[in-house]
Length: 88
Image (cartoon, rainbow, N blue to C red; front, side, top):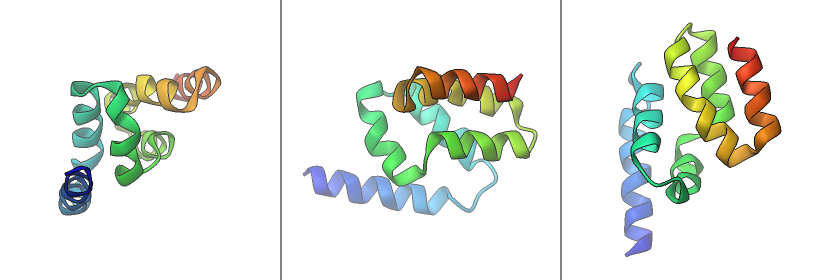
């Protein structure tokens, strides 16, 4: 059952990866799920810090800001602080 869920997650992310809304969708899903599930999500979606950087480069400041909590939880306080500094 867990393997099937991982496969479904991977397939779903693969399906939306080509759309411009990908970064928004991923962070919205993360924020609506328990943070204990985030490692599995971002194992397939990509590094949250890297996704935040892409959002910043695209000028998607609101999306980049939404990644701050995720980066802080998954990469630690120092990474979260650095990500917040880049956003400012």
